[in-house]
Image (cartoon, rainbow, N blue to C red):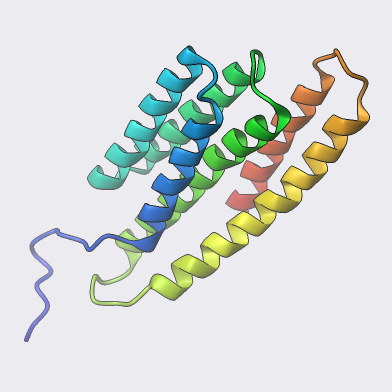
Length: 166
């Protein structure tokens, strides 16, 4: 039985499912703010659309929207833990989504890539947890009442995005 390459159809990737799971985690983290929830839902929709259309720019835009929703939630009722979960969920969603699309582009549909995708996901989550730990430690050491702790958490998200892209 021959493998048809002309259909343009690709099987769903583990990275795609994990990217959507991370996006849903970001939505759950910002649910205390109505506007942040709406932005996060739009970001999740953009991630999904990017995965379906095989567009890395849509996936990255969706991740950026999720991160923006987290920033908005951080200015309101969100706890430090919710900010961490939302920010890192946004970054991990974009990372895993673009990784899965890269595999779609580079590997034949018949090639089994689940192990590589899961290994990449584990690496991304480990980097996220380590960065979250440092961000949370910085947050806990700054005086209460200021916005320096939230800025430290969000800076941790930027560092995480940079580390995952390297």
